[in-house]
Amino acid sequence: MGCLESLNYEVVLQGASFKECRDYVRTRCSEYYDVDPGFRIFEKAVIGVPPVSIGLDGDTITFPYTKPCYGTFLVRVQEPDEADRIRRTAPGRKK
Image 1 (cartoon, rainbow, N blue to C red):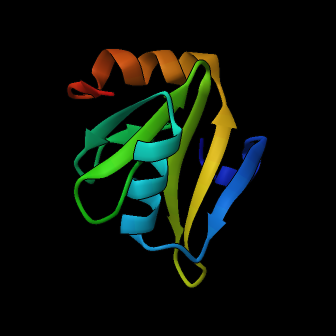
Image 2: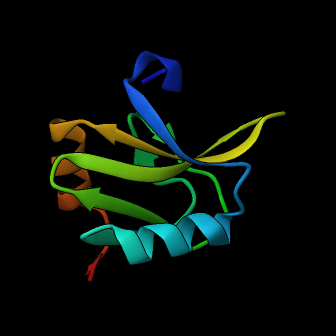
């Protein structure tokens, strides 16, 4: 990935806490995976307060993204290959 800016993303929540992101994913995504910080999405390690919830709706991934000096955002990206990789490599599926 290199940078979130290289993806066609949508900001779902801005200036959110990790708990707010987790609660959103768990209640609004059709499936989600709880991962530890360090799990990779788009080749970048996820940071946050564990557990970090990553949501999937078909090929759409919803995940928290923290940008230093800007805070934490919950973003949504449609990317079939990465959604499939998450399903194959993330710990146990929830929901």
